[in-house]
Image 1 (cartoon, helix red, strand yellow):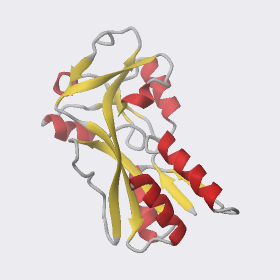
Image 2 (tube, helix red, strand yellow):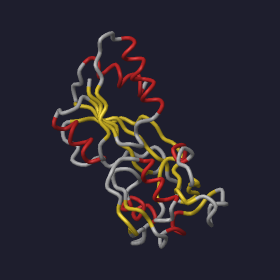
Image 3 (cartoon, helix red, strand yellow):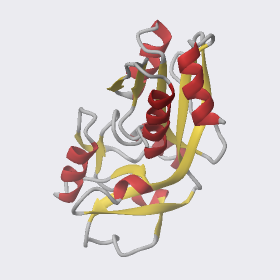
Image 4 (cartoon, one colour):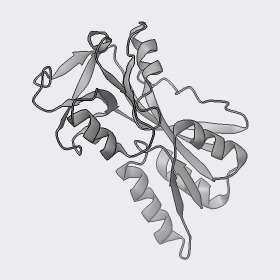
Length: 203
């Protein structure tokens, strides 16, 4: 079975469900590919992978916009608090929450395959701010954290993930209310083993 996912979509819950599936299905080969969001959707659409996990920012219980949905189904898997990643010890790193609009003119890192897309932040804040200071092309969350820690700019990530990035602080957004969503993408008629993972993640 082949699973494609974004770097922030590969959560402990997903890893745990994959382990259970492998235990229940002796001899099952699992191939996990970490790709950008658009590449995950395209891989599911073309049949290059059995399942995909995408992530992004949305209002609670709202679905994520899926590029070119085609003949596939999206199912909500998880929602968790969304945070801005800042260098540790620098203002406003001492605050317990921040308003998204207050950060519109800050320096941001454009990391479309790793962090929340700046276009999503612009739309949520209804502003033309959130302009990139630098661009990061890749899917390594740790590398993105190093750039934030060095002061190159801010990034929006799930709050739980920010705790693992040294030299940084994650502060949740207070307004508008946004969450980090993870959705499972699969073909309309998934294979039996893929269906088991779908049930484990959504049931």
